[in-house]
Every structure is written in structure tokens, then in C-alpha cells.
Length: 286
Ligand SMILES: Cc1ncc(C[n+]2csc(CCOP(=O)(O)OP(=O)(O)O)c2C)c(N)n1
Ligand SMILES: [Mg+2]
Image 1 (tube, rainbow, N blue to C red):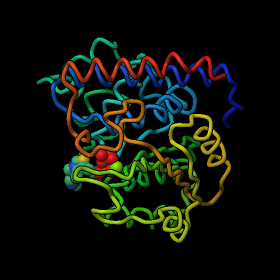
Image 2 (image 1 turned 90 degrees about the vertical axis):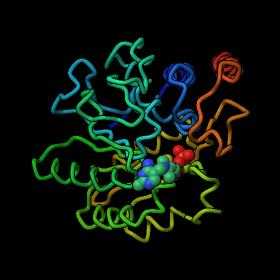
Image 3 (image 1 turned 135 degrees about the horizontal axis):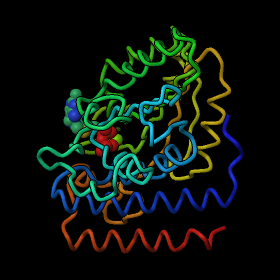
């Protein structure tokens, strides 16, 4: 069970999210390639997961009692790498090696490179199936660990995603929470233009899941939704997190161009300036 969140903790989590955004910009600037808007848009959720929600031990990443965090939309891994480095899974300096030959931090996560990644991802549409396997195995072993699966809206255009959703309900996997990055965008434009997903809440409910919807930039709302999800019995849960791709960096927001483009040094400077303005406002808002 999650404790009620205090203002002090919320400030800390929001500041961590801003630091994650800074690190993503720096990583991509150095790598000169990679995905920018998706990772930046998910910084608040990763801050909440790594620094409040997950039961984990960075010093013992394969600890049997850990919750499993599966990242299905592997291309947003810079946000996970930044959160892991800040949690001390590996040195922050290693972030500079993103996408370099022989680096442990490839452009899509490579499970055996770093303990704690749980799966290798990149080919979209596999994470919910993998999470179901993990959640089912934990139940068979009578374990209480929870499984969280981050997935994107673009992945919901793939048929295998819906097969997995059916199976999660069949096995009543109440130890599984799927978190959707509902940023309305994919590689070539808006999801509703490419392949309308319509009302994902109604769709998941019709597949017999417990569904919650949150503002994915409100750490408080997200934590409260996870707390509710943890109380649900006999059903898997889905949290639809409404996010803005590139959130916090004005010129990156809602622009499909920033799906897979790194900033140049001028753009990185502008982005860091905006993120710092955002960071400086946090304390005054409480
Ligand atoms: C099976 C598969 N098909 C295509 C791709 C190429 N691809 C990488 S990201 C992406 C966009 C998917 O949409 P979403 O995850 O919602 O993108 P984002 O919100 O991060 O921009 C595509 C088509 C892939 N990685 N895997
Ligand atoms: Mg998307």
C-alpha cells in the first residue's frame, strides 16, 4: 500500500522530474540521435515510479521482492535510463554513452546489459504480453510483487496488444497495472488521424479491466491512481495517463517531428532554459 503523499515529497518528485528532463536533453545532445518528445513527456511518471511507487533496491537490482517495471515502448528509454541513474543503478556519467557502440545504454533497452531493465524492447506491441507472462508466473509462485507495464498509444494500433488485453482479464491478473502514455501522437502524426483509437477507457472496460484516467503531468493524481489500482481484486488495471509529448519544452510539445529527433546545441540550450524556469517555479507553487 502506498502512503498518502506529502507536499514535501511532491516537491521532491517534481524536482526530480525536471532533473530527468535535463538529463534527457543532455544525453540526446551528446548522442546526436534518438527520441526526445516521448521521454520528456513521461518524466513525471518515471519520477513517481522510481522515487515513490516501485518496491525496488537499486543496490540489489535482481532482488526477488522487487516490482517489475516493463517498458514496452522501448524507444522512450532515455527517461528510464535517467531515472535509473538518479536512483544509483549506475553512474550518472554513464548517460553520456547513450547509443555509443559497446555502451550498456543502447537506443532501445537491452535487458542483459543492465540488471533492472526486465525486458529487451524496441519492437512495439510486446510489453503487455510479456507483463502478463511475468504477472501470471508471480501468481503461480504465490508472490506479492506487482507488475507495471508502460505502453504507448501507438502500440494500441497493433492487434497483438488487444490479444494480450483479453488474456490479462481471463487470468484476472490483479497484480498487473498497465500505464498508457496517451500523448495522442506517433511517428508520423496524431494517432486519431493515423488510426483512431477513440475512447481507450471504454475499450479496456469492455475487455473487463479496471480503468483510471489521469493527467500524466500531475504526479499527485498519478500516485493516487496507482494507490487505487493496488486495491482492485480479480481484475488487471489500466491507467490512461494523458500526457503532452515534449511537456515543458514549448517548441517540442505536440510536434511529431520531435518523436525521433535529437536537439542541436542551440535547441538544447533553449530547452534547458525552459526546464530550469519550470524547476524554479515548483517551490513557489506549494
Ligand atoms: C513493431 C514496430 N513497428 C514499428 C516501429 C517503429 N516505430 C518506433 S516508435 C513508433 C511510433 C509509435 O507510436 P508511439 O509509441 O505512440 O510514439 P510516441 O508517442 O513516443 O511518439 C514507430 C512506428 C517499431 N519500433 N516497432
Ligand atoms: Mg504516442
